[in-house]
Image (cartoon, rainbow, N blue to C red; front, side, top):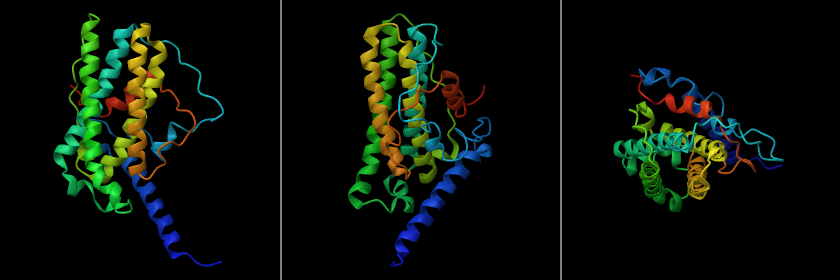
Length: 240
């Protein structure tokens, strides 16, 4: 059997990437001060943790944990605030040359040259989601929740941390929408909610690939409970 040095190097690089991701997700506590980022979204390969389940059938719907549709919409709005702010700050702090670091050298040039523009599109999508949800809440006579103050630390300054964190946030957003959708009472709100969910899933697939993970690891996505999602989001929210 012929020895393939390139294949061994690729395995080593992959192992190093996974170890780097684990260290980042498990050891960022000191970086944010008031924000408890320690063990951000769990340890191990966080990009896979929430999807490790039996592929044979989707998960059962979760119990109703929202007071009404306004509560569901404000829950989604909080997550969209988080994602919009995350991409906006990262793209303000890193230009295209900084973002296309050695970490992404393995990608084909045809892919690399589109990355910055496509991340900009994701940012624009998240900002559009914020505007839409705010408008719907107002139209329904509710009060949109105020945008929290976020601190993302080095995750919006370091290209490797940025891509890894983006993948985790997008996976969390997909699980959050899947978990909350069954609680919607007004059926007119279901189609736009599912439309946002499908776009967030496309975001998740894209940034997962950039992070060195398969973009669609499972046949079914697990819905995430509200308390788990809010616990994850609160790790980036500055404490009063």
